[in-house]
Length: 169
Image 1 (cartoon, rainbow, N blue to C red):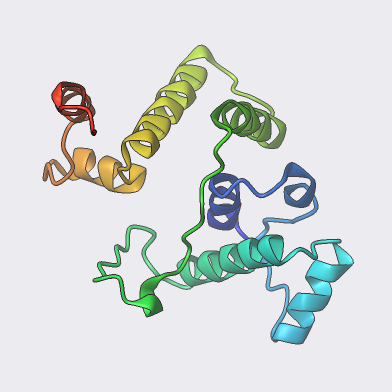
Image 2 (image 1 turned 30 degrees about the vertical axis):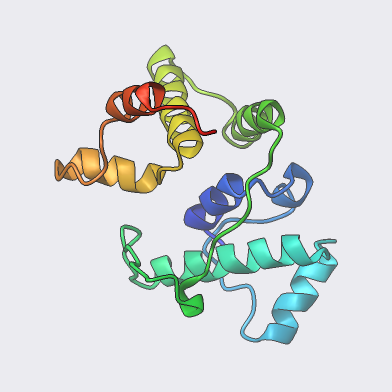
C-alpha cells in the first residue's frame, strides 16, 4: 500500500522523480505477496536494488501507519541491527539536493497557493536542511519543539557551540 506517508518518505529519501511519478499514492492494497509486489514494481520499470528497497520500505511504512501505527513512533536502539531500518546515505551534492527537493514538491503539489504556504514550506525546508547539516533528526527536533520537552537543543545554540569549538587538528 502506498499513501501520503509513503510519498513523504520517498521524497525525503530522494527517490528519482521518474520513479515517483509512476507510483499511485491512493491507500489501495497493491499486492498480497512478494511475487505480486515484485511484478508490480517491474511493470513500472522500478528495477534497481536501491529503488526497490526504497519503494518497499515506503509501502511497509505507509501500510503500518494506515493500519494504526502512530507516525510519531520513536524507536530507541543501542545500534542493534534489527533496528537498522529506513536508514540511507545522504547525497553529497547539496546544491543538487536543494533543487531536486523544490522541483519534486512543486511537480507533485503544483506549488503553493498563497505566500503563507510558500513561507511555511521554505521555513520547514530550511529547518530540515539545518538539522541535517548539524547531524540532528529533523523529526526529533520538531517533536521537541511541539512538546516543549527540549530534548533537542535549539538550533542557534548548537550553531554557536560548534562555531566556538576549537577546530579539529
